[in-house]
Structures are given as structure tokens and as C-alpha cells.
Image 1 (cartoon, helix red, strand yellow):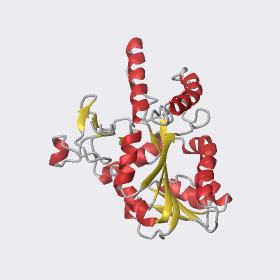
Image 2: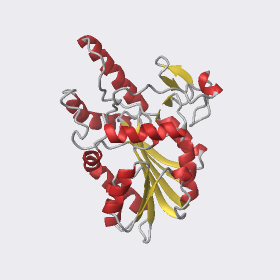
Image 3: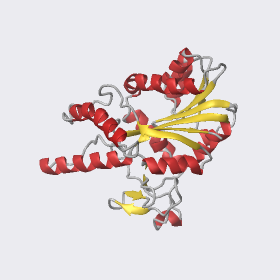
Length: 310
């Protein structure tokens, strides 16, 4: 509901990276270390222990190529950034309650064109960003000429100063082959008590939408050319996200339903006319279910997690 994934014409399907473990499906869950099992045919793998779901792995170079290709062909970055502006403000409210005193510094991983960094700068943060897309980095540097905007990936970048109050991953974690490596890098950069914010897909809802979409397409006897559900590299359950945070040296503060983006930035409504009504109803229903279950049942399409470095 929050994004759309499209293959470019002639793009080959994902294949394992070529190691023996991948070829035999003997892969470990990045969140809890459990053995991943084939799920939904050969396309996906799922952890029976914590529910994490992922595609078969790619090597880092191929994954970065796929990520750049996705953002160049399937992601309307500027529309999405405008739609997320209210979410960015709420996230900054949380961070500023934790860190009211200045100076305060944050790093946005997968910063895109720097829209979140711009909002943070206006509210008194010293922002820095990192992204793998060259044109996005150029746009962010133009928007914030005094900020440090790095081209590359977090585990490889060694020039980012440590002692940060916050590191954010807004809709980034589900694109990563090794999310644990990124979180460990974030821990190294944070000051004691520093916070990590993560917004990522809720696998239960994504799989449900996938099944509904497949069912409706079967009724109409049409092949799937574009889908509104998103299963990039990795998708999390609340339990798997909590375990990943703990495994990488972070103390979970809370995992909750994430606020939805505003409007229809991905232009899905013309193809899926019922999606606007579903999106309107989803947030209040998800909030009611969460409140009634004491926060144990989360049914928003995306999860919002906060964690702290001890």
C-alpha cells in the first residue's frame, strides 16, 4: 500500500548469490538466526521462529544495482517525500523529546533528496545523510549545501563522525541484504543513549495484500503486471524486528503501527480503485486492534520501531 515495485523490461528474476548455503536453501534468519525455509514457492524464504520473510540473497554489488534501478524506474521520490512530511514531523517530535538540548546530530540512512534532513535542519538538528543513488545525493547536497551528504552504504562509510544522537532508517531496512550490518554500524556511530528509528514493511499485511491481489487477478483472469504490495529484500514481523534490534546491541523502546503516507504518491488508485477506501479505513482499524491487544497485534502496512544504544 505504501509503495509499488516494478521490474524493468527484460530484467532477470532474482537468483541466489552462488554460495552453497544459498543453493541449498540453508540460510540463517538475519533477525534471530533460525533456519529459513522455502515459502510461497521458490521465490521467498521465511523464518519459522520469528516470521521474517526475505527473497533469496544477492551479492552486495547486484543488490545495490537492483536498488538503484528500482529508485530510478519505480519510485516517485519527490511525491513520496511530500506524502511523508507529516510522518517526518512526528518522528522529529519523538527525537526532540529524547534530545531537547542542542547541539544534536542525526544521520538519515537512505536520505534520498534530503527532504527529512531539511525538516530536521529547520528544527535545530545538525543533519547528515547517506544514499546509494548519485542523483539523490546531488539533490540533497543542493538542498542542504552545508550538510554532510555521503554517496555509498553505511557499513562501508568510515568518514561519518561518531557521537550522533540519532540514526534513522525510513523505508530502507527492507531493501538491505544484511540489515544487521547496518544496525551495527549505526550503534558504532551513536553516542550512549542515542536512538535508532526504523520504518519498514509489516510482512503480515504485505502477504495478505499479495494474496488478495492474486485472488482478484485470478477472478479477472489477468496476469499481474504491477502490484501494490511490496516485498523487496526483507520484510519484518514485530517479533523479528525486535530480535534484530536486540541482536545488534540495541535496546528496543517500542514497535508500533506506523502512520500511513498521505494521499496516493505511487499513483495506485487508477489501477486499484478500492485501495483508497482501504487506506482510509486501515489506520483507525489498526489503531483500535493495537490498543485492544495492548500493542501485541499490529496491522498497519508499515511498522515504526524505536531503539536505544545502552
